[in-house]
Length: 329
Ligand code: HEM
Image (tube, rainbow, N blue to C red):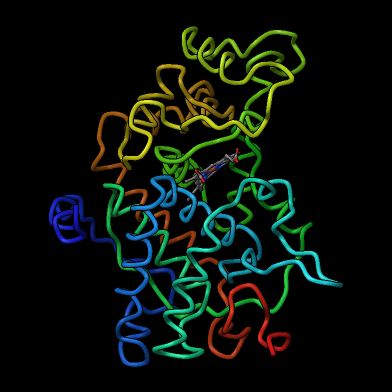
């Protein structure tokens, strides 16, 4: 299917949200300096997903991992080099973060038509939105004008990105640290309606939850059996399973239905429904009302994407997303 029919099909899902909080960013930031920027990113995402159905999920996660570590500044795109260890080898990213080549390809095209204009951080923010939309999810106007970080650290990524073993208070605390709240935890966790996780990210739940010597009792029995078959004890931790086993490549509210049925893949997914309180109420609300999920998801993405960004004369617009300009000769 070409891009136009897909867009026509998905236009039904368009949600319009405006973010009153972010004053430094502007949806028409590239209107004159690079008018084709948004179209180029969308074409890049679309062609990448034709080759790899998982790519939209990976691009969405790249933006999340960027924003949680010192704000959305393209810091997670920097390669390690002599004397510099960046975020790529931090536990949440190692053998897991994907999509760097897709961002590189889009960046190269943009450098050809508008050199040193569109930041890597903005490319990832637009690519995340397009990934959601082209997978059947909501559309929102991306606020633009972020600049790219000059440096970063592995430690920052290790500490700031929430872990799949977190309980609800720990999830809320890690979101609070980047200006997000409990509702954002639940709506943004809905990203796990697409993409995959490795056995290593949920293995403990299958055999020895919380050192109990038993599987997590909140896992539905046949799902547990399926996952144990896929991820045997001492098996290959890099084998992957879909985060949403029912509709793994469609951005919908099936994730919340999975979680309510004991089919949340990560512990951090399942606890949203097994912990009494607000998160449980929101899981149920989103499971019953996809429109509410789409609306809240878009609003939370806008919040996450605009927290603590570099703008005006801070940072730089990298020519190559993997290397700071000063070292790119
Ligand atoms: C609530 C806290 C969160 C935790 C603990 C968490 C953890 C994880 C883990 C462990 C994986 C699988 C990684 C692997 O095994 O290789 C994953 C995948 C994913 N996460 Fe999250 N995540 C969280 C929130 C988010 C948010 C806020 C987003 C986006 C806004 C997101 C988007 C994704 C996507 C799309 C994937 C699949 C990526 C792919 O297939 O390449 N996650 N997450």
